[in-house]
Image (cartoon, rainbow, N blue to C red; front, side, top):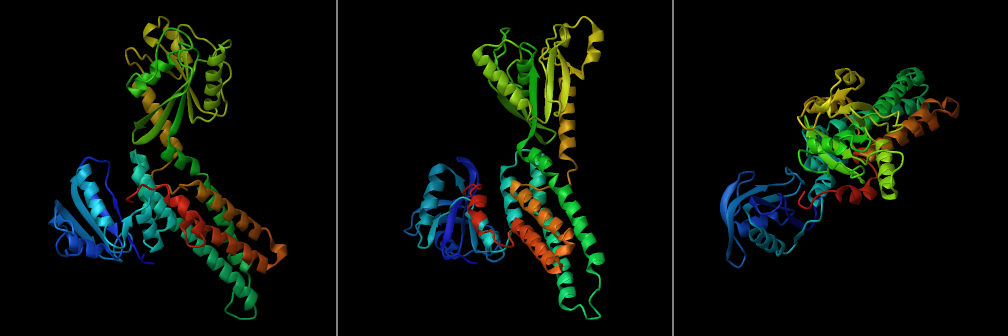
Length: 440
């Protein structure tokens, strides 16, 4: 599919910048280059030119690159103008290019949408490109690159190919049962593979939590009684005064969050209100939020003043936790240290490096191996669960006849096809491409 109109947008970062990249895609790309750059340039070779408006004035000077379709990102003719990154320069270039007949400003994600419609990327690879643009940590970058290169798509397509083969074998037995070259017992040759696929899909879906941690972050929540040192630890981890620290109990009344990059992983640390039995009305709201947040955490840091420990009541038993003794620099009795998983002092830094290392270790354990292929969207998980449901109906429905079991396999293959965009995805396109920035 080649679009009738051309689109243009700034495809580089925030202005002002040293260099800005303006991208145009569509049938007018070649004419725009010839007009603004003065003549056509060699395909895939950067050329330095003065850029002039159609009525003559010089707009800027810089590099222009032309990518002839279909061997381009969108599958159409694409041109890029590398200009000085001032706001006025970029605005004038965009205004000039959009002034050509058949050229308009691009909508969010429209370049990638054209790449999908022209068969250059599938839906999973499209979503991975969005993740790559938004990646803030090394783990997010690796995860996005792996999926953008097709590892996740290939897994789903391999399952789909196996199902298509299985269905063909079953239908061959139905239609040509009397032929000598058709296997006589489909049950023994294909249903065992379907059962194995159910196990593979189930194991794959279980990895979604690891993918969520990579994309959204490993959730660490700090709990403790008032003045246990929660906000002091929070500030030490943030390396700035992110929370107010005073001797007065109940200073922290709302949830405060900071995002860390530990060994290439995104870690979200939340400071909470001090937990105690008789809080004021407003403080009680903060305590309720603290306990609610603790229930959704990946790791709890339960802080206690070693010299003056104060109980905080029950904490979620199903959430991993570290019991941490604070203010170790004031400790007089060394035997108390054994009661804790770690001891720290935010005043002299004791134990902080070890605590960060332990948080990173636990986050890495949750994420798993760097090369694991994981479902990267809830959309994938929902369709995979539907796939598994149809497969279970197929393998357990021997009394319903081979025709109905083959139909269950068709429905399962259809759901796998929807993940990568092979079938029936028009209703999802606006939602998926809306998450992109303009120019991508």
